[in-house]
Length: 325
Ligand code: UT7
Image 1: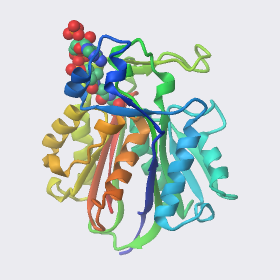
Image 2: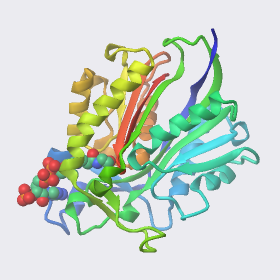
Image 3: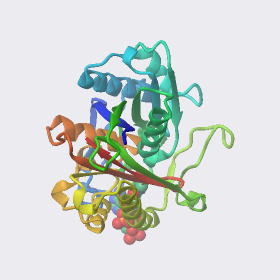
């Protein structure tokens, strides 16, 4: 029996030009390159330039994905953009991308699940394609987290970076088996009892300011290792696949120790894990599509590879997606 699948058609990414090495933080804070590397795996991150906004990053990543897929904006009929750092409270950042890439029809909207945003966006795009609401969806994760950091808090400001990644999914008829190309399963979760562990202390309807990131790092760490392995396993089970079927694990890039422990729990050898955290830091919703695009540009991803993505962030919100490349 044939089925409709959302199949990858192209991906791309963009990183702002400014690179901030760990040592730069040691000039103003009681921290060190050694501590940051040892505890997180992060060596550097990119920060957007003054006047460079989330939509600028998203537009550049979208153009790269279109070029990779041999497409133009006119070929896209929907944009789902995951961000926790939109240009404005409204309109959505997605509509700015829509105009910039020359889409004159279709629709574009943002979704917000913080660091898990890209996985939630993939699930949305999959539903749009399977329901017949869209043929070809541009899925973007884009963030300028440097704008919501407290640069006096060493426990958070050294962790995050700016960037954007994009993946185009298109409707294709497949056989309806776990060997199909495309999105095979997604698994989404959230639990609002944990809002106090990771949040921004402002917002339009509370303080009227954008606020800055607050995080109970150790608590998040514990939740992350358990929940990421669970959701990764759940996505595989829904797809009718086993741990041994995973070709590439593309995790949210928050902390190398979390990625290593999750990979161990999932039974994926570390050489099968795409790791970019050393160069990007934690770019929230952008981290998975950035890692995916870097892996693709390095020629790592081959047609037929099973890619397992998983992420967790504020909410808590977490999830996973199994995609055959
Ligand atoms: O994307 C959303 C998901 N977020 C995450 O996945 C983040 C999860 N959490 C983590 O990655 C880790 O918990 C951190 C990297 C945030 C912290 O690492 P940790 O090993 O859990 O350290 P800790 O919070 O237990 O702190 C240990 C010590 C503390 O000092 P004392 O109290 O032992 O004297 C901290 O004050 O390290 C101190 N510390 C630092 N020292 C130097 C915290 N940040 C720094 C720093 N430089 N930047």
